[in-house]
View (cartoon, rainbow, N blue to C red):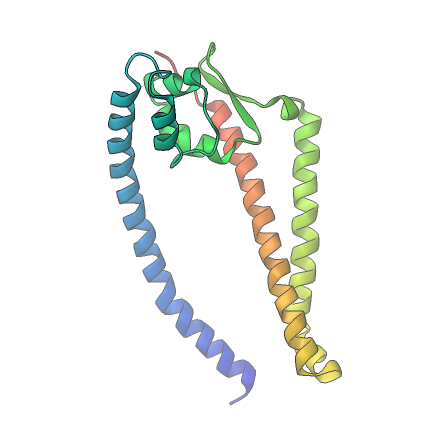
Length: 194
């Protein structure tokens, strides 16, 4: 058997065993997350009381699971007392770079840097270009490994494959960043009221 056929068979076997386990794990994590989310909400609401300033340090520690932003007392109260807002806290935590909260209008808004369409467009373009360049170079190196091995030997080939994996990782992170912008757009459409 050739090396390509052997690696293909091994890849298919590993993929065949891994995907069902991954899907099962994701489903279990989702169920645990929703149970944990309700328990956290009840404890945070009790801790907040009528004024978030009373237990601000404890509230920030409790909310650190959901967001890295140090929420102001007004924002903490907004997430707790506006119906449905707590559900979006974790997604808001991922979109911190792009979003702020308008507590008067009870909605998410673009942050000052990204309020204009052109600034959002250029941010998306920048991320897409990083994705395109890193992904193209990473995949090109991986596809050319056989030729590279024949021309330069094992050590440069391994070094090149390591670089290719890093480039593909950077492409994946860029794709994830584009997804965060998409999540931000979805949060802007959410309407909350008393």
